[in-house]
Length: 266
Image (cartoon, rainbow, N blue to C red):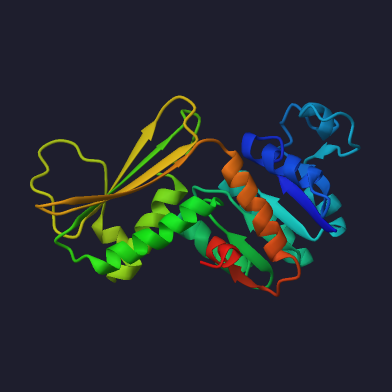
């Protein structure tokens, strides 16, 4: 039985993951952590999501319950995620982090705090998106810089960070395989008289509207042709099911850094 705490379990993504854990016979949901200002603090989590009484009370202090778990799943915000990572590292538990929007300095702090625990950080838990990472990397390696690369990501109106963590990860993978400095070649949108497109640029563009779960398209285009690789998420369920796979994968793993490609063996 894998014991799991979900931080951000009162949110849309965390709530779905928590429900799947609660319904999984091989897992036990031992706690839900939310912000102290969350309206459901102190309430039975099951009642708040329509499952009935579960005796799982929504709390705001991870350290109070962390000793009763094996893994912590994190879907909050960068600041809170770092605070929770400090606690998880202190108690040597495993952690799966799906939070996005980290700065480069915050990533450095994550790498320092997580080096002694089993730790998985992924901007996107879906199988399809992680296959997209692989296909984009292979395509970027096969095509030279005669092919311009543009990334377009589309999400619901409520998403707070831009561009998406998935778009950033796509750009990072492309820059890595092309052996270029991402900060030097990335363009975030375009406006005004900017002149001709520079060779080797990676364009990233964000669209926000409605309830779109998530769409990512990477365009490779030359003067004579265009190749587009696209992933469209129909609902958050695909990310939640991927998280369940990650929890199973992380059970009993030694300290180290893991990615969804390890979970999916791709």
